[in-house]
Amino acid sequence: MGATLVSHPHMAAFAQGVAAALAAHGRLAAFFTGVAFDAEGMAAAAVRQLSGRWPLLQNRLFAGAPGGQLRSLPLVELGARAVPPLLARVGVKLKPYDAIFTSHDAAVSALPWPRATTAIYAYEDGALLTFRRAERRGLGRIWDLPLPHYQLIEDLHRQEAQRWPDAVVGQPHREPEWKKRRKDAELALATCVSVASAFTRRSLEALDMRIPVIVVPYGFPVDEFQPRARPPAGKFTVLAVGTQDLRKGTPYLLEAWRRAAIPDAELRLVGPMRMGKRFLDDYAGSFVHHPHVPKRDLPAHYQAADLLAFPTLGDGFGLVMQEAMCCGTPVMTTECGGGPECITDGVDGWLVPPRDIDALVERLRDAAANRDRTAAVGRAARARAERWTGRETAEALTQALPD
Image 1 (cartoon, rainbow, N blue to C red):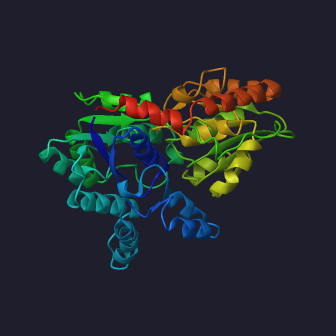
Image 2 (cartoon, rainbow, N blue to C red):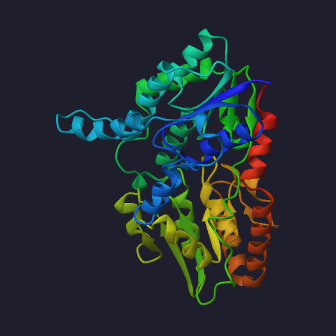
Image 3 (cartoon, one colour):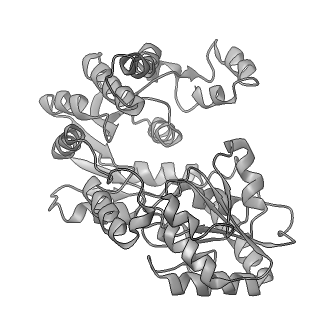
């Protein structure tokens, strides 16, 4: 059985899950990442103590494999984070994300790899040079695509900008040409693609790909988001969490909310607002907006809501759905993300057609008119979450990956 080298630049939870799953099955060659500490190592106690002041440090502890398999590259990550602000002083624009991913890829491609390595598992935007080296050595190359293919997203933005011209902010969404070339080259080098939803897989079908695409949904974060003690009381409350923009379907939600005209109800939008002022002026007073809520406070927002609305038009998955379901809050979403992987319509949530304002209105009104049933669906959502955690994801992924 082969051993896979996992490469991700900043210890994302899903990358840790992949590495831990492979390690549990004796299939991890190494986990190359940024700032990271072995949870059983000498520095772990100090990190846990400091995390009381800086909670995000806790996310940098890795407990999924022997310390020798964790290859932390702190100077690469920290250096990449420091460069963009310095370049900005001389008029050069470089996004921190791009600096971190490309620098990490370059470092991993140049460092020694364990001799047992038979495959590389790397992520979109951070795989090109590592895959080129792997190809020269005849190793497998698994490309993790967290979002739908960029062409689908660009087409989506163009179409929605035509439907909602007053909602457009700034220039149309387009990846820089250099990033498109890089993504295309990574995909061309891949021998397998890993995605979290069938929707993302479908975004690749138009490319006439001849390599396998495996779909394994993310595990529900049941330990981070606890179920509410009781159903919400007072105003009927609908919550939407994430960037509020065209791709997330925010215009459809706002219009549906206005048409639903539910008495004694509140719509709460949490996250950056990327909608034009002229458009938002038409809905002034119809919603409450919280531009930013710390992650530690999100559970309370989920628990206080009757329903999470996530009418996305194009997501790789949509982790907010899982967070809400863990809290016992039912979700109304579309098939344009991980909804079908998380929800059985009418049992533990609801799936509505994308862009269908009438369907949204009907679902909102029904949820408000039948709050007890809505709460029961939320309890079923929590039960479903407990049946598919990171453990189940890890097992499914290791079974699906090629040997």
